[in-house]
Image (tube, rainbow, N blue to C red; front, side, top):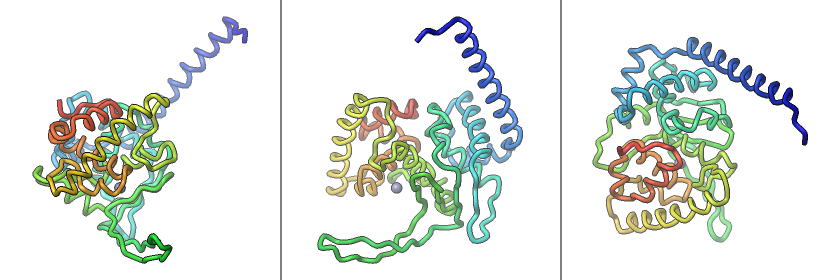
Length: 272
Ligand SMILES: [Zn+2]
């Protein structure tokens, strides 16, 4: 195709115009959804793992959290009142994993449904001979492809001051890891990666780490990652992401290859 000098100039002009418009939209959004100092400070005190970030990263997280609040729609269920500190707690923790990846990684959903407490969901599962069994599942959160994301405030709040002895637990990071996992349409523990080489490299490390982890859980050993990860690769990715951001040193010393795999995806090194 022949491209003239004029068309290159036009292309550059449109790119610059689009950037300027986006910047203006963002500045308006930041003003509309500014996070008050008191609420931001409270969020950092409650969720102390956020304080691993340096000043520049914290500023970026605060900015991204405002943009997140501007484009996502929160709904409180059964009269649950959505205070500012509640939505900021969700936004800040949801934006932590995508701090270096960009907010566009959450383009595939809009709604966030907040409950005061966990929810009991009725489920059905067929057994090996096809008989369907009904059971109740207690949910602290749930992510479905395309949204909305469901979260329980009681579970978010009570995990804030958790002791560091057991495996990491963070329902917000868990559900948003599922969102990242499902960007390619599959909940399989592999997020959207640039090409088949990257997918193969991911698969090679992930499978070994997943198998090793499940062996440890079967042997009753203490793990940095929540034993719930043995439910399947998609859950292993979600609980490993919790450990990566909440107790990174522990994950790095116990499963260094898993730590490095997540660091290469999230472009962050929280244990440093
Ligand atoms: Zn899960």
